[in-house]
Image 1: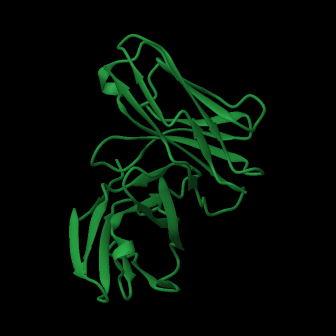
Image 2: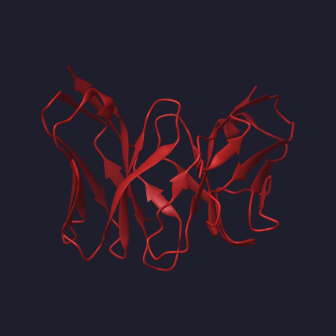
Image 3: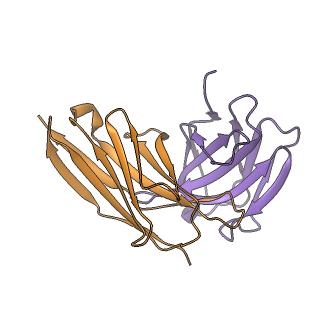
Amino acid sequence: DTGVSQDPRHKITKRGQNVTFRCDPISEHNRLYWYRQTLGQGPEFLTYFQNEAQLEKSRLLSDRFSAERPKGSFSTLEIQRTEQGDSAMYLCASSPDYLADTQYFGPGTRLTVL
Amino acid sequence: GEDVEQSLFLSVREGDSSVINCTYTDSSSTYLYWYKQEPGAGLQLLTYIFSNMDMKQDQRLTVLLNKKDKHLSLRIADTQTGDSAIYFCADQQGTGRRALTFGSGTRLQVQP
């Protein structure tokens, strides 16, 4: 297994544009998470899927953000009308269906909004 | 709301032990985790401990949990230059939530 993968690794966009990121979890991991990390801070939780169901959403996930996991495998995170404050590293993690949420992280997508 | 705090920086010499400390506020935390992040990379899960345990050892890593004081520590024995990174502690609430709450990270610098 190659681990969690994310695409693209870097994205530069202009303010007001829409961007979409993809995450491929470790195969057979039922749970998938999105986090956002800004410089000098720890990751902040955005949302969580159990298979295709989105079960938790942070209040950080404004109405410009939407996440999907249509077939319970890969997930996409879309940001509409990007703002400079959206510049961050967007991290995806997956975990198996155990009691301890041993979340395995991907390398992240670094978003820069100009 | 819940909060996880860590000291910002720790410097040790190669071969010494490193102790990274973390405090948390949520008394319902079930599991607590330690992650390592190298520059430009994602987070690597190092170890975790269940809240009814006091200690867990995994090779060079020892985790100590004082649930009464809500204090967690990670000890790295025989610290190597490759251990230089940012270390994050994180907790998971016991209310059925899956989200992890992370501290701001401790930068460990290992001097040769």
